[in-house]
Amino acid sequence: MSFLGISLAPMIGAIFTPSHDQANQNSPEATTREETTRKQIEGYEAVLEREPKNQTALRGLVELRSQLGDFEGAIGPLQTLAEINPDEPGYRLILARTYMQIDKRDAAVNEYRTILTTKPGNVEALSNLVELELEDERPEAAIGVLKDTLTTAETANKIEPGTVDTATVLWILGELYRTQGRYEEALTSYDKIDTIDDQDFRPLVGRAQIQRSLGNENEAQTLFADAAAKAPAQLKDRINQLASAPSSITEGTENNTESAESNDSSESTESASESASESTSPETTNGEQ
Image (cartoon, rainbow, N blue to C red; front, side, top):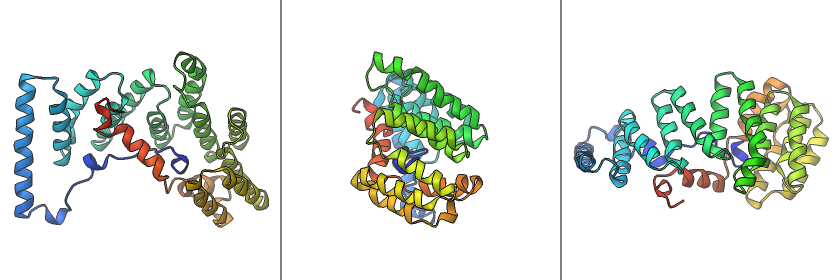
């Protein structure tokens, strides 16, 4: 799924990646940086005592506490930002990831579900919720989430065109069926995508992988070639890499689930990764999206 533009668990580099490696943590320079950061935190906290909803101070507090690894301390200001900006899902996406950092999965799930109540077409919330259900060995729950989205998609798109990308939701559902070895249901999802856009290359990739799993390598190669012909330029190489992979990698339902899906999601396209990052970065959550 990641390969085709759905980033299942992207991390925010500026927040969740330490700015210095562990070897330098005890150096004088690191100590000075930490002291400076803590003073900046105190400054933001002083501002918030006077102005509890000052968004600049709240965002600064989130970033600085996260830089120190204080993810628990970042929760409060993130919750406030999410409440102040109910129509901006970026803050709740960051909040959900922060909950995952401190191993509060149920809280993360609740945040994703909250996003989907007002933004049913938010692909990142949807795909991450599906991933969490799968990690908890609840494939039927994951399928239910996607089916519910498709059920409400028509109404949501009538109210606000483009709210739900139905083809992408069908693609996620089809891939989920495929990795579960439920090929007929996967093919049904792919067929529905064709009725929306017969130039969409994704169903061809899915069908190719199914044929490969069934041992029909010639049919798979034909489908991969057709997919590459339709795909955007930046994805053609990735499809060709899939086509040239040894067919034994994806034979059988179990191997198909564990190996082929790993191959599919090992490399996100740059444009998809940037899109996911931009939609949830502190800068874009400031109403500039």
